[in-house]
Length: 339
View 1 (cartoon, rainbow, N blue to C red):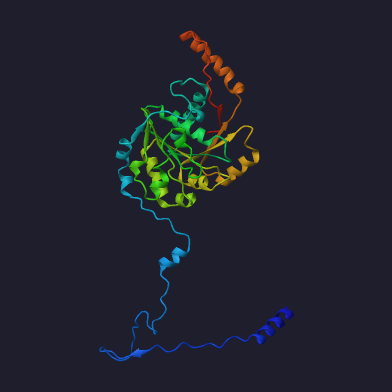
View 2 (tube, one colour):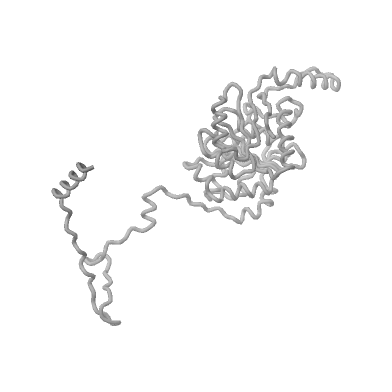
């Protein structure tokens, strides 16, 4: 320590501090009102002091803040807005693997009805209206699960269901239902669209869809706005179920934030794709916040459908004389640990 102090002392002797120059006294002049009032310098003159930087110039040198122009009055008229929503035919993308409402006895549809039954039972025991569907990593079936669960819920006559795409990074609901991507949620939160522009009613069903909207550079900051939480809360008050598709947990913090706002979270895992480590880390990232359970995706058809197909083939043979199996082309899904 003594060597460090000696070195600092020598450096101070070699480079003495510059003498402090006291500022000149302020120039004063006489005026009609009295003596000794401070002089008001004319801008641009030699005596004019340097102008202090304005707040706007300082802010412009940093990252531009979000400019939010949401009309709060829209939320007070939400029920009228929903009733007057535009309609679109049910014409989903074939590769989206959605269950067919015209074939309710297909095995994938039965699995989603099983998930629907468990969730509706939970709803009778606790306030449960807004639901986040997410996964640990991409390509595990979260959007597939969210869309099919929304369709299954909307098949009940007394349920009004909303599927909202809160995956602002890689939205897919618009492609699944062949809808325009904008206007959507990001457009509304940025004041580029009114709330009435967002809703689309699918065919003659009880299913409504809100797309993600235009691309944004700061999706997490947009979700952190109080207007985003207010929107989700208002939607939960006007729909029996609001199902949110969100980004994967281990690739973005969006789903973690949405889980703190919504009533419950469902984690989707895929057999042969999801590792035990990723499931553990995904659960830890949620801090067990409102986790309702796990949906297992990608089960083998033989394991899931063999006895099911036998039972329903017998039913159709007896009633229609047809022996055609209705297992369909949908992806195999099983429900686990939703309780």
